[in-house]
Image 1 (tube, one colour):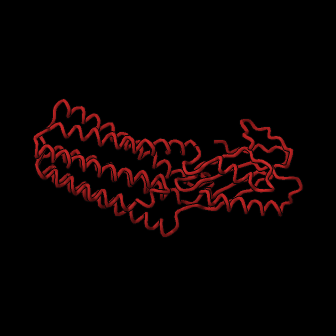
Image 2 (cartoon, one colour):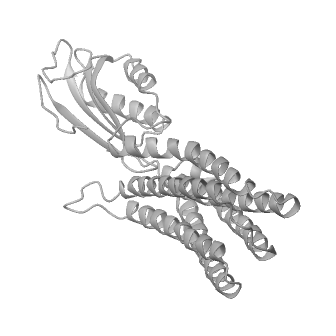
Image 3 (cartoon, helix red, strand yellow):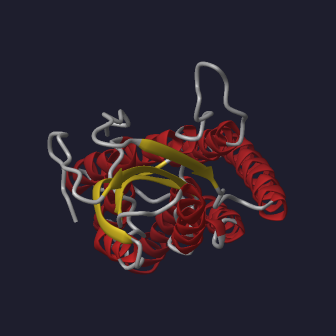
Length: 318
């Protein structure tokens, strides 16, 4: 996205910051959720490694290795969130806000890798269904479900408004689903002896993860490329700006995500003839108040006068 403003006719820049960000209380709550989630998953992974080596179960050792990705996912999201709240510098004038979007992209890629791995293993097991191990694996998998479900619940509220938190939430939730698949297929094999249940359940779990992760990956890539965030309707924003009685038209409207929880807007406003600076300040206050209710907390306006023609390329005058 271009942020360069080519001044044409009468350029008068107006700049505003109004953060739609995590409150101190919610930030503290998210921090606590991350530390609890990392602690629980790390403890579970260590226990799974120890049990796996003790009962000589390759399946448990492999699952423990996979569970390290949960810990990595939470650490990535935590680093992204912390970087996003660091102050701006002379070099990074917007701060490190995009780090939280980058974290969600890394988590989406990590989940896609897990899907590929599940499909590859499922194909191998179709050709050679393994002998299911005893109750140790079933019990360990059940503990995994409980730990991942508790960890995911801690992020349930935050994931509704923050794509970075959603990445961590999905990773935990889908890992719990993998463990459910292990228990379900293990139960079928235990009671019926039908070993094909294991690879078939892996395929089903893989497909569910693929569909759940695709949305996260697509939205993360879009936000990295400064696309309009999913929760924002550009046409509605256009209508909101042009509905003001002193605004004749709007052009060069850009909306993008500063971070996984903050959005920004720049626009050229063509005002009616005779608007004074004092009147414009009131117009700006009204518009930014309206935009704050549309999940846009950072707005920059460039003002043109009536009859002014925009000479910029790809200008979409409204």
